[in-house]
Amino acid sequence: MRVVATTEAPLQTRADTIAVGVFDGERVAHDLPGEPLTALLDSGEAGTESGRLALAHAERRRLILVGLGKREQFDAEAARVAAGRVVARAAELRARTLCWELPHRVDDAVAGGLVEGTLLRDYRFEPFKQAAPDDPPRLQELIVSAHEDVSEAVAAAALVAAAQNRARDLGNRPGNDLPPRVLAEYAQQLASEHGGLQATVLDESEIVERGMGAFAAVAAGAAEPAKLIRLDYDGSGGESPLTALIGKALTFDSGGLSLKPGAGMHEMKFDMLGGAAVLEAVAALAELRAPVRVLGVVGATENMISGRATRPGDIVTALDGTTIEIDNTDAEGRLVLADCITYARRERAERLIDLATLTGGVVAALGSVYAGLMSNDDGLAAQLEAAGRRSGERVWRLPLDERYAEMVKGRFAQLTNAPLPREALAITAAELLHHFAGEVPWAHVDIAGTAFDAGTPYLDEKSATGYGVRLLVEAVRALNG
Ligand code: BES
Ligand code: MN
Ligand code: ZN
Image (cartoon, rainbow, N blue to C red; front, side, top):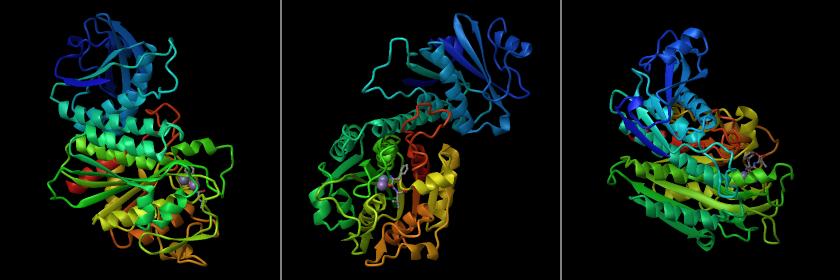
């Protein structure tokens, strides 16, 4: 979809469909000749309650009047939701070019929200199943019409939403189509397309030789080789502190010998969405030419079964020398992340943010509305919470505690990957990571509940959400700003 901003009035554009919002207690700012929108409001067919939609025609255009609710409550997230509703209606109307008339006196974040909501709601995953002839067409163009020049905010939002949609594509691709090898090739292609981005891939043999015993143990049962994918971007000429973004990318998680039940196993193609969000967030920061320095580290592997697979009870040595007893091969994400965290620390990252579909525990606690945030640094945690509110990808902090850390101590090795009793699952997983982060400011975002099938109004498709791209872009920019 092409996305542009203009200071022309909607009727002067080539849009076939025009969206106009109206707040509680306000009138339509610029009605069209014949006042069709005011007539809709006066007759009660349209209303200002948020989400209410009504339709009119004028000057051979379709007009969608959308209620925006209370002006004081209309933030970027409300704009995403409103835009999502408008896109759904516009698709039914077979719209091809949509123009949003930006409401008066709103800030740039609202303009950005309208753009994001439009692009995210228009997304389809089509590589394996083309649209049927009678399916609504996709939008070809979005025009944001405003009195002021909002082109910068509009372009930035379009770029970030496109990155999020690419992360959704990666997530929706099945395990056979996107093994670690292909994800690594994808990262190299991203780097070749975006200036200032550099990709480096460590093969499984290097993962083993460097002593990443925890990561290697997860990869052991798979025929497809594991990859550690590294993406570097520096938009600050070495000036700003190095932030590592670390992602779990299990391109398929069968559970290993501690096999998952069959019913939901197919969903474990989504177990790479932390890694996908990291790759696309770094790419978006590069495209934005943000004055920041980031290191993306993505641990990509399958978790499979074979004669070489890790057995429950096996003891491995992680990159930093810590011994870990693998009591459940399905608690694999923390093993991969442990070595990725040590890798990032050795690269002298000054703060660490990891994103992972890590535990069923976080799904039980927070569902698909908030991701779980756990951190050893109150300042970093607060920055992520604030970035979550701005981006609409919200996080809720759960505690770390010496007594939880106690629970991950192993019986036969220093740590266990599956503590008993089976309690506080999201937090004990984080405490294992905490051991490897040590004193370095670190935040862990458990996205198991938000990464797919989240029911977010402007995401529509029940599939990968691309959760975390907006959050990470927002957080990294704020950390350096
Ligand atoms: N990938 C799963 C977590 C998951 C669950 C992601 C639901 C998305 C939706 C992870 O590898 C896993 O299996 N975690 C186990 C750990 C347990 C064995 C200690 C869990 O949370 O049940
Ligand atoms: Mn697992
Ligand atoms: Zn997993």
